[in-house]
Image (cartoon, rainbow, N blue to C red; front, top):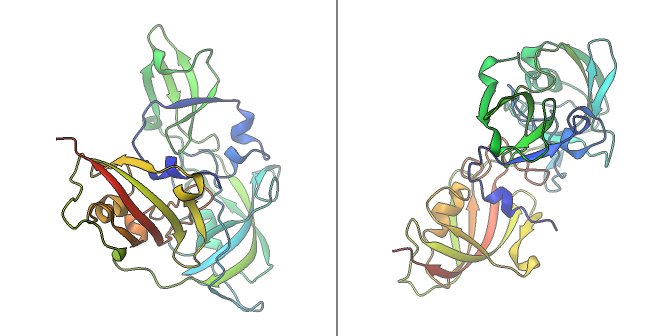
Length: 320
């Protein structure tokens, strides 16, 4: 399984830029154009899609029922131009639908406002304004950065991805020392059509209220990490609602290291591992707001998902 350690490490990266051709942004067949910006209402992200695995423990809505607020829904989704030309779709590639909790503001209003009440198998096409889709074009999303921070060979018109979330930016101007980047979504300011097809709807499990730590093996009871210390851990991460493993350092055979208490990892890790002593093994249950919140992570952690980690604190390296 591909590691999500880079997702766990959410260090801000202002100018971590990777070159992409424009077709990777607007094309209907690339993962970059399908997996980014589903949960955001005013978009800086590459597309409105966020894909997740099905949740096997929830109770499915009956076929004759309709999606309700709070249900975890699976939805196939197409973006069409105002004239009806298809721009992108979840049906292409591996064909995975969107998965999100309806009525929680995890998706754009153009989706949220229409999915509740849809029947299983129903398809509808709705017209959406920029405010319901990728937002208006904003001058605040046009910024300058030092030219030497760009990859070699980049010129005006290139599309780059910035930071750990892959925000798309277009190079609009190149000066002697600075470059101008437009971080508005390529579809910002456009009237569009969304075609929605409800694939499934399940009753979401009750949300976890607080973090808990269940010790399976005691540590030394005296050596605890403090902010700034580097810790070495083994872990296995699962979705709490169905036990699905989304990442494991043990499977990779490589422990994970991070500096505790400085925001390199999700809050639940900083606080949970910070309460463990050297050698301790424990299961840490983390509510969504201490994990990846309403954005989720990549194509493995749904928005609003509570998490469970089996963690072994192997070593603590004091930084003084």
